[in-house]
Amino acid sequence: MSAWIGLLVYVLGLLGYNGTLRRLGVSPYLAWITAMLVQILMLYVFAMVGMLNLGIQIVTYFGIALLVLWFLLSFWHKGQLKFEGIHLFDFWMIGLGLAMGQTLLKSPLVHYDNFSHWAVMVKFMTFTGHLPGATDKLISFTSYPPATALYITQFVHWTGFSDGTMLVAQFILIWAAGYAIFAGLRDRSRALTGFILCFTLAISFVFNVAIRLNNLLVDYVLPIIAVAGLIGIFAYRKKPALLCMHTAIFIGALMLVKNSATFFVVMIGVYFLYTLIANGHGHWYRRLAMIPLQFAGTIGVGIMPFLWWEWHVKHTFTLSKHQISTQAYSKQLNGESHQELLKIAHKFIGQILSTNSLSTKGIILINVVLIGMWIYIRLRAHRRNNLFGMAFLLDIVFIAYYGSLFGMYILSMPYAEAIVLDGFERYMGSMVILNLLIGSVPLVRALDRIQFEQNFQKRNTQSFKSAATKNAYQISTLVVGFFAITMMYSEITGTNFTNKMNHNTLPLQMSRIAKPWTHLNHKKVLIVDPEKVDVDDYYAGYVGRYYFFTDQAVGQENFMMTPKAFKVAVEHFDYVAIPETHRTFTVLTEKVYHQHVVTGFFKVTNHGLERIH
Image (cartoon, rainbow, N blue to C red):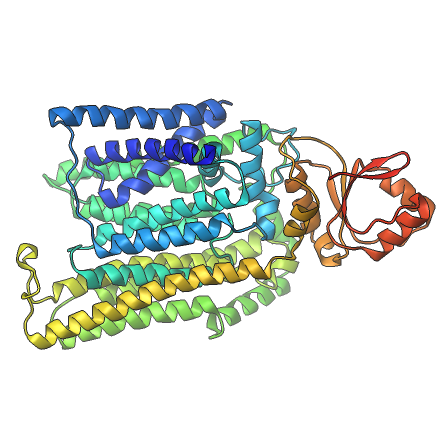
């Protein structure tokens, strides 16, 4: 019950920010994600000054206060919001969003990176109430900005900490950003164009298949927020003040999601500058003075939170993993031979040209659809459109991103990881998702422009050129709507299937032998794992660190030692966790302590292993 009350408190706070932003002119389709990003930036300030828990309370209750204020003002007919109406895509978003949320609530965290950073960061901030410092060894990747972790921490603060609530929180952020895409529609009453965007959203999850939504990694978060940022620039192109405010908020939040957001921010910056130039008014000399000021001021305000973060990392940690450093890049580049660089380049080009590559298939799909529709509209409808130009522009973005990605492999990755193009499909998948969603907006706008009736007020069941075109429209709507629902349902069932397949993975085995700890500690915990690979890549150790909330958890598989050495090794630890049967450990325990130990969680004592239930 307390979780439901907490959820209500969070939702009321969110509604307060949403209503306020809408009254300031923010699109109702962009208001949800904008409200969330505004709260993230507010929480960030509180976190940076060491008052995160107080910040969560203030930020949420301030939202509720705004909601109450607007509710009271509505009695005097002041500040009432215009009702946008309910459309078919709203039902799709709500229905399938709730279904996915329900699935994620029951999903466990399994992926390696959840335990090496993303989930452990949320757990750390939830139960300590502050950002990690130099003495907090639990957090390894200290240079990773905390935006999504702050948002999830706020959500679980009210609803309760668990794998499921963390996943639901991140999904809410993703779904709110996805909803922003409907701001790009010309006529929202047209079911076909709305369902095409729903279908595109559903298809985008195909290119996130390496991660899926049941993980806290930000490979999908980055592109979907960037898409919302770009859509907002388009929506506010005639409103300079709102345009600058929107751009600064999205740049600020994106840069705090992950360091690799730089490419997405550059795209937003370039489109923002183009929009300022294309929609400038007044004499040329006034525009010459105003546009650089608007651009520099907005970008400056947008990157200030990240600059503050970089200062914080530099002055808090002497050495930080994945910190941006030109000196480190130079050292990395000089450490690799020309032969190694050529090998990486050869492998990289081979991967790009491979038709087995999912990202390459995505690029082909985007080009085929946009160019195909350009030809159809030009030849069949005899209308000019910009779809060919959009395909060309997106290809330039892909090429630029390929260059950025190759630079990452040769500058910041060890050769052993770079030569196998570690994470290639994950990184490229983000760009395919971004361009797929960007390309869908001009596509539906072009389709809308070839409708027989261009006056939105006159559009009804009779406003078609002929009975044949009306019939074709209705069939197309049914088909696209069916596939939009089916594709999203496929993602839900795929997540359920993944959860079932993961039932015997280490994190779930751990949950069967012990209760998770929520008090930060330095207890030495030995994770006995018969899977050598889990120990060698530190997966067992990271799972143990997250689960027992200690920086002293260690995974070990090799126990080929004498009973005397075994006793010394075990007594070095405070606790022993055995999630899966380890025959050698069982035999040695019988020899040394005369105990038959198979699986379980134990406290190490002078007399042996004491089981903890």
